[in-house]
Image 1: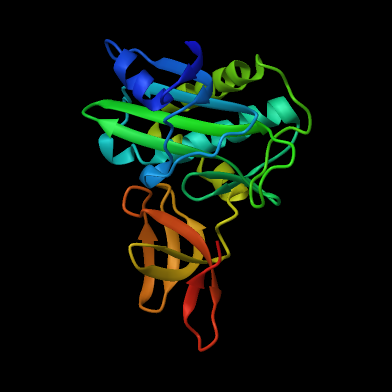
Image 2: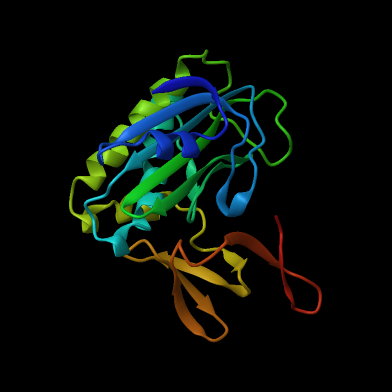
Length: 234
């Protein structure tokens, strides 16, 4: 379902979902969008906002992997559209060397899961730290085309065994592994791996732990401040 403008594709998909059938809602603009932990999107001149409502057949303890699956699906869809590879910042950001170009938001209510994706398709003179997938305006049809490819990828993976979600591909694309990070609430360490269930394996001062996307509010790169204290760098 393609709409020119919505308050939030997440809300529209949740409201319109029926009988457990997958439903994709796509818009070029959303006026009340939100990011993970309630952050509001800045809006590019040409963007894609999409939400896929579905009732996963996977056990609920595997649902957090759907955020990572959606990131891989966005990577595939944007490669098809732009001919370029993008990086994945665990658990929900789409990035390239110029900055963040999109993100994933997954919300569950009962047996319904709504996976949202917002992507800057084209943004001349974008603010610092923000990137776009394309160098030229792709036109109004691009949002629906990219969203359709994205949703198809997710549904294909979700129809298979949850252990076959794509961990090797995610590891290869993940820019978080090998970096020092901080996360909310109150953690710091070095990301060293993605485990088979999609968790981020982190070496901390107190030992090795595994974070899951459902238990942290934000993951950021970190630098070491004078005196050895760790601080966020953006």
